[in-house]
Image (cartoon, rainbow over all chains, first blue to last red; front, side, top):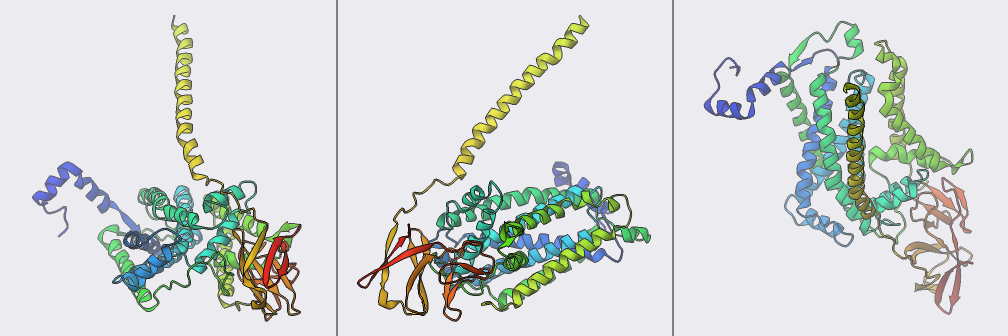
Length: 365
Length: 151
């Protein structure tokens, strides 16, 4: 049954002489995955990758009908949803897979954080992972505007205005992002270019690095499991782990199909720059905790505008998250590090609580 | 002899490296400068009109309502107070640039994005907005409403 015991076919030999399949086979056969009580968290990264591939495929399909201009964008999406066969399905899957991808990405990130997988020698894997999270949020932010509807228009107005709060270069950054002083058709074309070309190119590079490092270092065994003497048991990556991975991918696909079929993505009203912001305006759920925080902050804190405190605060928070492998000295020394476990739990609780509050508030109060 | 070569060798290499390095920097600059300039959007002349005639009549604006209109290339809001007076402000929220609206149930101006409240003088009275809305002058000539930047 196993390939190596049996001589390979002629095609395999032909390819092997030219491509070097035998070396690849050796690598795949050698790869093993540790088995312990936290093994389940290993599947989240693969699931995120799978959902990213769904995004690439459905994104390419959407490009065939989408027109990136303020005059035509909304109408082209409307046409796609109403006239094009299965247009609603492709767009709904693109939108739902985006949400699910961010969700699995967050779980992946927090499991890595709580299991301290960022410790030596995986610091660069962590850095590239945080970079990928930034790119994923960039995808979400730029993609949200593309249908050119009311909600997207105001979300983008607020989002790009927030960059203006950054000291010194803020106003310049805001203009650069908007392609002018206001959110207009120029912003739409810019976001389109960023969404379909710039971010995919950057993601390909960073994802390549991330996956290469995961291959190079193998899966991290959590310090707790290591101390408990676990992690000695392993399973072969191929086919044992890969088949389990596939189960995860198929579950994600099933969930995606159900969500897209039962809750197709809506389009809403066309953006009108001379209309009031609609009641109940909300950003995507993964920006909700920041949105809600900005809503709670008073106009002045210690003489500084509240929004500046909020935005700078989130910037510092992001930087802290990025630098965790270098700040957590105890884990680096191989000692238990409850402080950073609690920091991780605190971040999760803050995000969950503020998101909950954001969705349960009364829109007009 | 040997010492001489040893002394000279690094200098020559250093010179070539310096030469190569500066040309590499010059090359990069010649690529990234135009690209950078290209990405910065050109400034479009802002509408300098200090006065705008509104596309609706004074009678169309009922007491305790508000209406958004175009002032140059930014939105502005015209409010008729419950007492019947017409007032106009910039409709751009001073917090994060959303467009505000008139709330008849509260009797003042409100921003839906982050729950900012402004009174009928444009003053920020609650929520995150840090500054009042810019007020404009309203003049009614017959049925026509004319709004201008207050001086």
